[in-house]
Length: 205
Image (cartoon, rainbow, N blue to C red; front, side, top):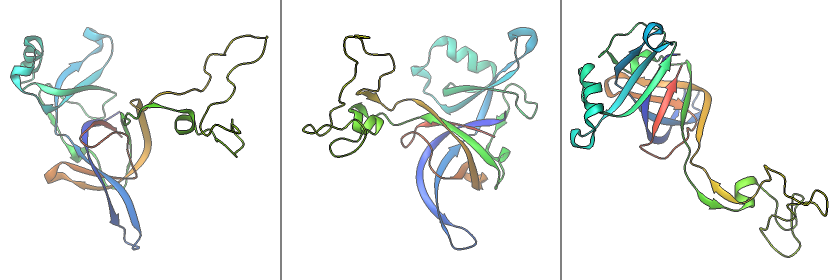
């Protein structure tokens, strides 16, 4: 599956030919360098390793510097492997946003915004007072009963409770590419994608 590593710039909106206002996300997609070519003979599978976003040399290990030197490039902050890449690529090749076309659909994967420790109303959509789902008569946002009585005398695994929310890998599928700005390496996709501004995302076609 062909793809690129990118960085979420932010959200905006554009008008289509019918005058409809469409919310969209702007992604800085590439250019990415092929930093390693995995083969069946050596690695047991075929894949392309791409690197994105230059990293300061003093913040890199000697092993990483040697790895990127083989590809003839500087150290990269983000490295991702793509299997079943559509086109044949060699070590050190540059892949840019031109692999995408307007109108096609892509999948975008990123790490969702971390929201810290949250209660059951925010985390799982419990109803609270006056509503049907796990509501209380005198405590607004409490979870209610979590266990049974003397049998089974325990709380089942997977019980929805308060806890850390967000900060998870999320993939949004079938986002339409509205615009490709090749000279600025920008990709404009319809809708929203996971992550905060300037977070890394993986775009697959």
